[in-house]
Length: 116
Image (tube, rainbow, N blue to C red; front, side, top):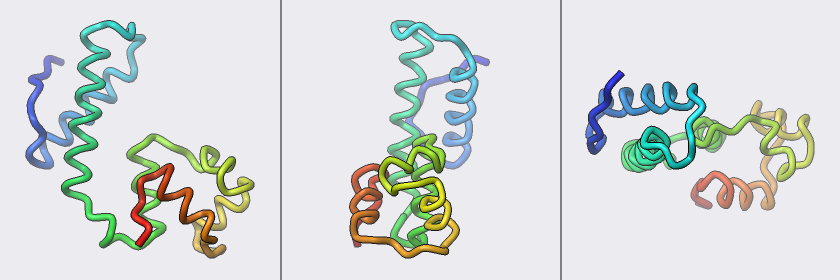
């Protein structure tokens, strides 16, 4: 699939860029290859578009966390070192455990979730 590199201006551009990233992730790319560099640029463009179009302030805190985890390709297990245990992470994400101040700081630092 050929791909025209361009600024992401709408949902269709966003979808195409994410599909190309997914395609490139499925390949064994050398770090200095053109395709690897294309993937890096696309990731930046996608991230910038999502920051402009997704207002995390409108999402509830759990949805904001899940959204950022998807963006960054993180799984629940990736939060264990910061939250404490797989059970604690699961309970937080399933609304069975309240946030602590330390968790809020972690979500801000690791996931770029606003403190307010």
